[in-house]
Length: 221
Length: 335
Image (cartoon, rainbow over all chains, first blue to last red; front, top):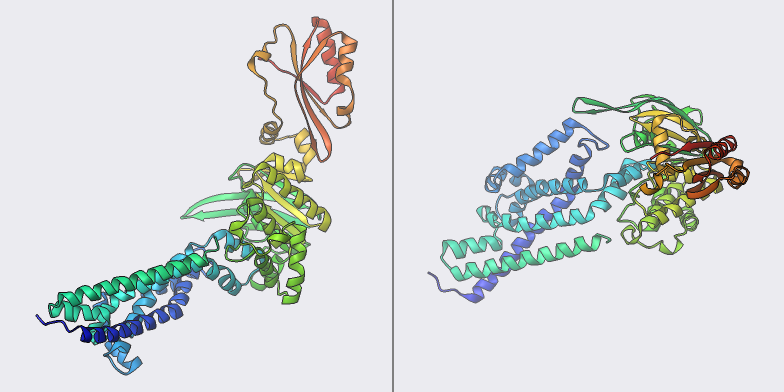
């Protein structure tokens, strides 16, 4: 047992939070940037939608499933060569953001797809009847109508990312979760573990509340 | 104006083929309000959707203004849709857009610029009587208001055709009437050819000029509305009409041992003569009116009267014959 040095702990926590925010922020950004188009792609190539294409839909869905079904720890290791190629290193929080980003893209793409399915078919039909182009359908109808669902999905993704990022310690990514494991678990500093876990709970609560607020605000009801 | 030629629509549901529309041919005239009536599952909605190709017919032709549009795709199809407005039972407004933006969207789709949009939206809003709700979101509107927005959106681009898919089925009676009045007003003011489908004869009666009756995907009968009500040919049409024009009497009045019960139907000008009181005067019978109503269909009266005749056997017979000669139809009611 170590005696807990609280000033050191605070310094560590500050660093860890920065790392968590870096990793989760980057991958969440990637999820929005690429998860939305991929989810949209799977949706519009789906059965009964305007770009129906069984093969493309199958390929898209398969790729997303491959990422989603591989345990994150395995993916983290498997992607090391790719990570090195993209960011020049395979360790540290930036490097950890690559596999985290890929997981969140796949995760969010599915949520995007399902919120698009929630959009009232009648509204799409009405816009089609007006003579809207496919681009207009996507930009003016599908995405705005799905916005509350998209925001809820983003919240779920962000919360899951906080969990996943705890495993980033394997590649030296650091972060709050990793701090809890290293100090609290490996070094038996239960107090540190409890403190960090409480902080994580607070973080997740804040994320959820903020996400709910945004979704509610976008609902127009 | 709109010509449908031998329209068939088949749906392939996992190998099980159902035919929703079977060999329907009809012609809709420019500027008229044309109704399609039938029970749910009759194929009327599917048929309506072939007019703007939301539903592509499996075979047959959709001809609008002498142009066969059934094979159009992409940009050409989009262009024809700009001339065909459509409103829906569930309104189908874009919930994330305000009333103003919903209408502006229709204009944007037609490639209109900002200035034109800002000039046109208030115009159509005024036409449907919703000027004060321009900034509201659909979820804050009542059903009737939502349908008004739907109508405004559908006519924003000055279409020549307006398709109405059960436009009042989600509305209460009073709102239904105000929406039908609005549709009629728009039809008369703008000369838009209006096609309206409904399962309610009351809707047809109120605003249509002509009506097609559908059942099981087939077109059973097509005529002007007054003729459909007064001379329904097909049994299915007869049952639809009887539903609307039924008169029901309590059982105790159906005892005809001492008197006769007559159901008299009179149409057109004859409805305005005083035949009933004359019959009573001439033949020394007592007449008691038990039930009656007059419907005005296409502004022509159509009346039903149930009367009880009492008097001598001979007098009752003569009075009945007198009425038969002077009214549209006399039926004896028996218990």
